[in-house]
Length: 112
Image (cartoon, rainbow, N blue to C red; front, side, top):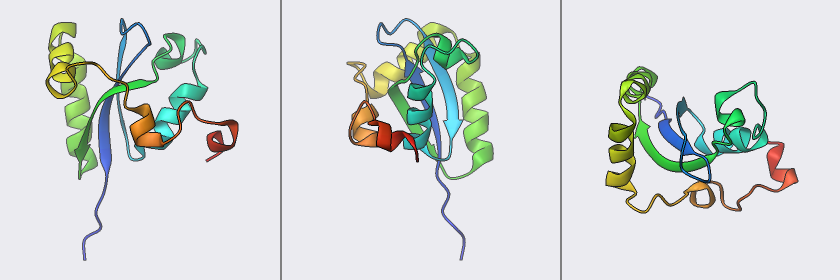
């Protein structure tokens, strides 16, 4: 029997919605918490620009497909990235609480 795999391509933004971060992960809630923990840290792009608010995500069964899609989105102009978000999420709502439950995560939750 084949094992189901879950890979997520996702787009994060900062609270002003002025910066976008595109990533891929096999555990979306854990990755959101990691981005949140890194907020304000200048050694990562998402941390430097406080990108931890999830505005878009899509599922892929295979990692190669997810990586290809991530690269595809990263190459797009900002207007095209905005269009991807707006098609699925016209109000640019933050999905962190939907994916993770409580948001922001409590300290106990940060130690996954």
